[in-house]
Length: 255
Ligand code: 13P
Image 1 (cartoon, rainbow, N blue to C red):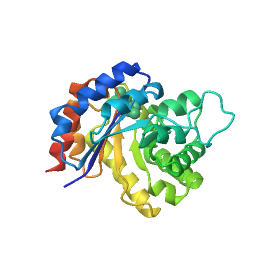
Image 2 (cartoon, rainbow, N blue to C red):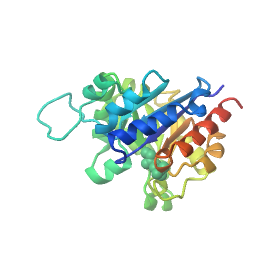
Image 3 (spheres, rainbow, N blue to C red):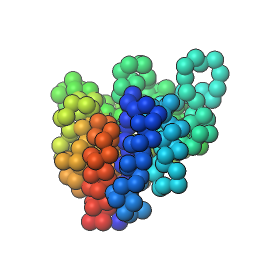
Image 4 (cartoon, rainbow, N blue to C red):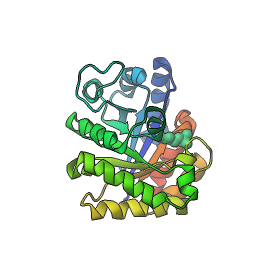
C-alpha cells in the first residue's frame, strides 16, 4: 500500500469560525472517516485561525500546521511567528519556502534551510517547497533550478534536517493559474528530486506535488510512481473538492 499525504494550504483565507467549520466538514466526511491509514490529511489555516482549527479537529486523525515560521527561536522580531508557538498550540507541521513567501518576502534558500532547522528543533515537520518560475520552465531550466534550491537548503540545514522533512514540488507557473503540470511533467521532476535526495543520503522522503491540483487531475497525478501526495491551494477551501482529492489518494493507495 502506498502512503499519500494530502495537505490543504489555505493561504490568507478563513476567519477563525470559518476555519472551524471547514475542518469540521472535512473531518466528519466519509472521505476522512473511511480513509485508510495510508492516507494522511493535513490542513494549513492562517495563523490566527489555527487554534479554532485545532479545536475543531479534536480527536480526529488529521494534522494541522502553520504556513510559515521564523528561523530564530524567539526575540525582537516584530510580527513574526515562532515554530515553538506553533508546536505549543498543537501544530505538527509547518510549510517553509512557499513561492509566495520567496516572491513577497524575499526568502532565500539559505533562510528556508534555517527555518526547516528551527521547525525540526521545535518538534515540527517542515514541508520544504521548491519549484521553478515560468521563465525558468520555458528556458528548460527546471531541474537545474530545483537542484540548486535543494543544494542550498541542504547546505544551510544539513542532512539530518532534510531527512526529517517533506518536500513539495510547486512549479510557480502552476500555482493559482489553473494550469497544473501534466502528470508526465510532474513525475519527471519528482523522479529527479527522488534521485537527488538518494544521492545526498536523504532518501525516502515524501515528495508532494502542488499547483492547481483539483479533483479532476488528482487521480492521474497520484498514479505517478514518485508523487506521494499533494499540497492543494484553491481546491482545499471547499470541503467537497478537498474530500474528492482525499478520495483519489485513498483509491491510488490501494491500487
Ligand atoms: P493552487 O492549488 O491554488 O494552485 O495553490 C497551490 C499552492 O500554492 C499550494 O501551496
